[in-house]
Length: 117
Image (cartoon, rainbow, N blue to C red; front, side):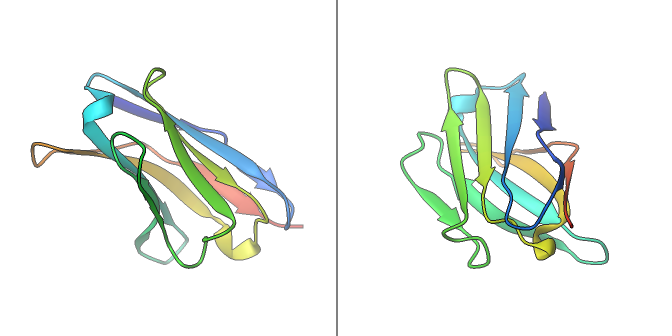
């Protein structure tokens, strides 16, 4: 099982980034997917989630209207489009998979996002 995040980097305030999480080793379409983040010295927090079929999404209040989660089940990939980035969005972003049927959770290794001028 692998979840591999990519797309992080350094961006100026107001800029955009698109994170990707490529999944392998499990039935991607049977898992809800989510993005979490962890800033230095803080706990890991939920950023956005999407159901296995992609019909429903949810967002943290701090990112509503700026971030969009989506998935492509044909490509076994989940995305996080991040617009209007702020310095407080700086964190390591993690992808997470939760089975619809079993108490099984997978995590990726994380990708660093730094918002700074």
